[in-house]
Image (cartoon, rainbow over all chains, first blue to last red; front, side, top):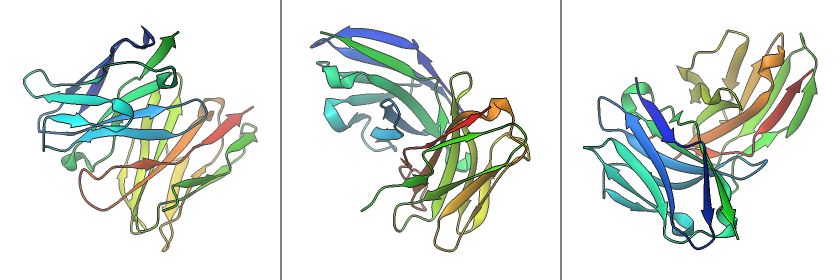
Length: 114
Length: 113
């Protein structure tokens, strides 16, 4: 069975600083990997996804993530935080063998300080 | 294209009642999945429907059920509501291929009193 671990339930960054959100997955076969963002009282919005093409994936709003098979990681980064990045971020994995359901990490809430 | 829509957005029910939530997927998407989001358990998969058939099911009691219609719209039903069923229920739709992105609706916030 697949699982996802997000290190840090809360992250605080200053505006303009690097945003780094960590995600590690457990899977016996290569997974599909996703990062979603959730703003208050809203659903989930896709930031980016990895589906076995390039290991460095660029997404919306300046975010990118790198798939590292040897480390079973898919960390999300953004070079310069903006106030509008304050939200909760979820890493998710899906496997064709598991019916493509999404298994989510616990989420990381990002606070951006002015 | 219009996104995934869910109705109603908010619901208040009392214990023992039942509730039906509705989801309209993105046009052309035949897969609809449902997820429950709570502060304690996070995001958990309930079930997936594809072409009117349940294709996958999570670890929830039989009180949670769903169905999908020929136009791909889906409903989720929870019977004999418990306090612990209070949650945000999210619906997601996607195309038919493995790895396709799941697009989420805004959710239905269910409060059980």
